[in-house]
Image (cartoon, rainbow, N blue to C red; front, side, top):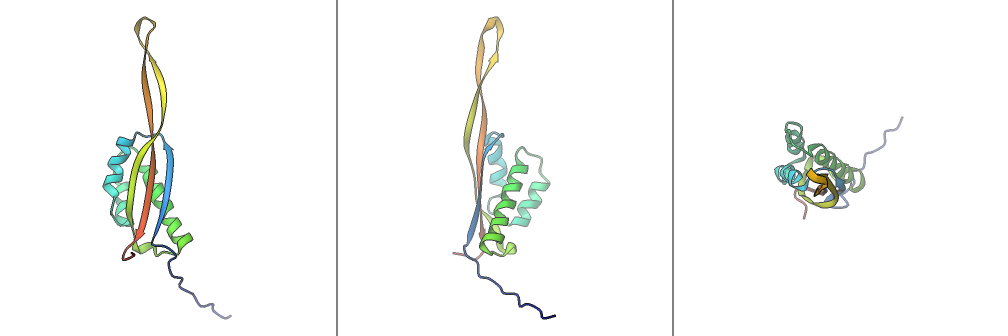
Length: 126
């Protein structure tokens, strides 16, 4: 059997992204998690997210994993050189609801949602 030579492909880009919209967690709670992992290596970010009890960490974890998969599979980047370059949370759509009150009246309230954008970058890239 002849062995095939492995060819090392050069990275096509220096960054990859993932966008998640309509997350049923308020932007204020999501920003606490996003601010904590910004600028960290992926291994450090995963370790932080696995050992933290906050709202929205599952979504942030999956988004970082997705951005890493995009970088490795689509753009041939090295997984060991990646870090969370940019991560930010924006306001998503709001569900407007009414809360029943005394004497047949009601008060409005809003259920807020958020949008998450994660960009992973390679160390040493431009």
